[in-house]
Length: 70
Image 1 (tube, rainbow, N blue to C red):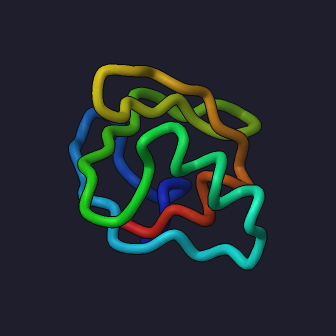
Image 2: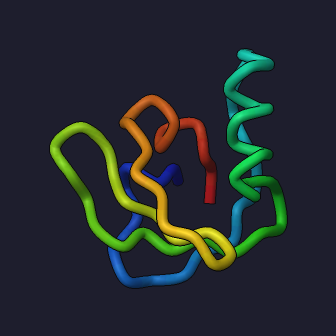
């Protein structure tokens, strides 16, 4: 399942980042978003969602959210 289908307020563990784009991989890694890390969907928005990774909150678009497998 990816983050676009995740329940908000529930903590998940990232299983895999499903993308072929090295730039997107590097961006997600810079946020602390990689396999084995806990992630929480704070809320869903029209164009994506707000997530909590480590001690930060980030708004990510639907493309990034669909690449993060939990």
